[in-house]
Image 1: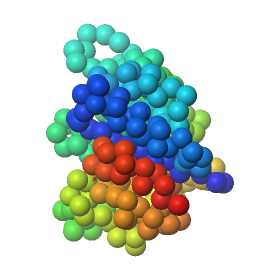
Image 2: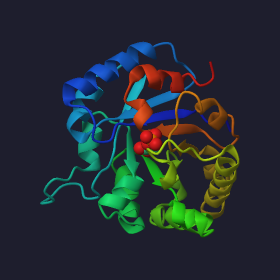
Image 3: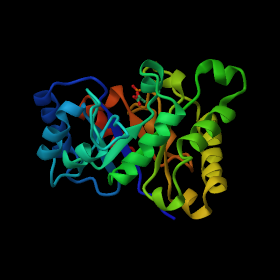
Image 4: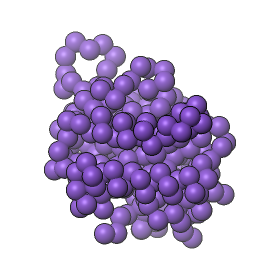
Length: 252
Ligand code: PEP
């Protein structure tokens, strides 16, 4: 099965509303002739509706960086899948390592969020990845397997047709260090076979597995040439549209 590459930008806690709209609009004009790559940016919740509205009809889709698993209620400060969808987003990033590290997210809360995203009509991008210590201790595959199986525990294959996995080694995020081609190749192959074992060959075949961790214009082609790499989740280098378009155009 041919999987359309997804290049997704995580804007983290950067850019005010007007700044986000300006960068998004610039990216949209730079990407107007891109046809074989799906593009997504995830601004802050506060800018999501503004940016989605400004990008309607362009090649650039939007996503949220997080969500809360309940539909609505007395959950001060939280935002539901339904609200994100109605803001115009198509994707939701779930379980980013910064959320696991700073906001106490666990595989259990991630599992509820994946379910809520799917129920709310959003495509989940489930982030997983090992820390440097875990890698040094030889626990990489154990950790990744647990994050995948616990994070998807409550979902059946029918819920996960639009699932995207993002392998983001924690030690490579925002550090300028990128996993080697061999490391990425080994992990992505393993993850696809894990989805096959947990669900089905068909689902494993259609699931896009992104790599994230210091992806830049000068390393994206090597990463994208790896067989089981179906795109990239990009932090720092997605904040500047002129840089990000070079990543989107990895095959040109
Ligand atoms: C990320 O935020 O998911 C990420 C991969 O960041 P960076 O590209 O800056 O390492």
